[in-house]
Amino acid sequence: MRGIDCFDGFFEDWVIENNVVITDHWHGITLLGATNCQIINNTVVNLNTVRPGPPWIQIGNHKNGSASTGNIVRNNLTTDLNITAGSSTVDHNIKFSDPQLHFRNYAAHDLRLIETSTAIDQGSLELAPLIDHTGLPRPLDGLNDGEALPDIGAHEFSHPEKDSDGDGMSDGDEAVSGNSPSDGDDFFEVHCEHVANE
Ligand SMILES: [Ca+2]
Ligand SMILES: [Ca+2]
Ligand SMILES: [Ca+2]
Image (cartoon, rainbow, N blue to C red; front, side, top):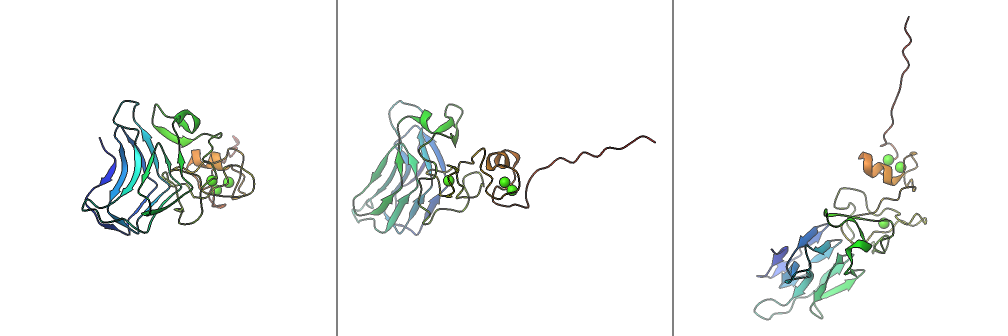
């Protein structure tokens, strides 16, 4: 089965961001005939190791041979890239083969990043979406080194100790509880009141 695959361009000014594509075909995200499109902060992984695949992010010529121009492919975590020369600005992408190096539970399709992933804080701020695939704010300081930068891929890592908004809850805990790690007025607390018997 193919992913986000569009073969009959021209596609103009499309923004494809924050998608998680898990497929057993070459076409993870494909635009054939693209003008000024943006493919940013997506995660594209292989469903299995059987051919066809592994899946790629592709920008190629229109099927009539006309060139694609002015596109941007950035901050993507993908098993392959297939970008026709001259069609696109291509930067801050990671091409990987071993999913165990990046994802919490690849077998169960939980593609949130693990703390040791080299994708954390390695993205470009330029045109990066301000939330991730799950709605978490982006960028977060996933390395806890004082600099909040976007991660590569669809998911932003929330550090288990970093407290970006200073509300007493770590980014990691806020991601679990469903609070915002960038809003100091949004946090989770339990109030216990002692009621004495009279
Ligand atoms: Ca980050
Ligand atoms: Ca916090
Ligand atoms: Ca908060």
